[in-house]
Image 1 (cartoon, rainbow, N blue to C red):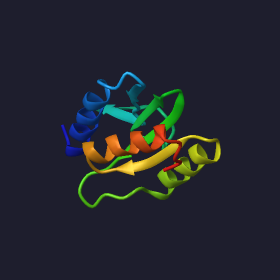
Image 2 (image 1 turned 60 degrees about the vertical axis):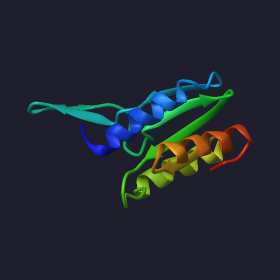
Image 3 (image 1 turned 180 degrees about the horizontal axis):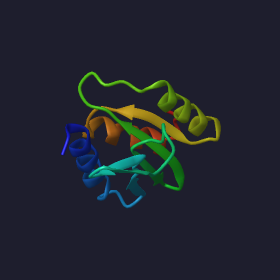
Image 4 (image 1 turned 45 degrees about the vertical axis):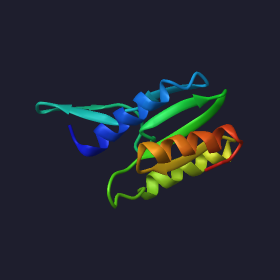
Length: 107
């Protein structure tokens, strides 16, 4: 399991204790042996959630990772439709992002 996957799992574990949050891991695809399977469209955030009834997208990164242009475009679409979206690099950042989402922020 890579570091980003570990962080996604840790964030989801922390979020499950907030009764105002329903968060799900979103996979854009996976490889099993020699076969590749497509999931969500490219650029889709790692975690999507309903936060007190509001759409929230979190793109999880580790180390010096940064959002790709297609991930930035997805975040812009989320924000343009009234949702919340941002990149997070730790559990603490994810929890702070959810708090900003609850408060009505866009990112």
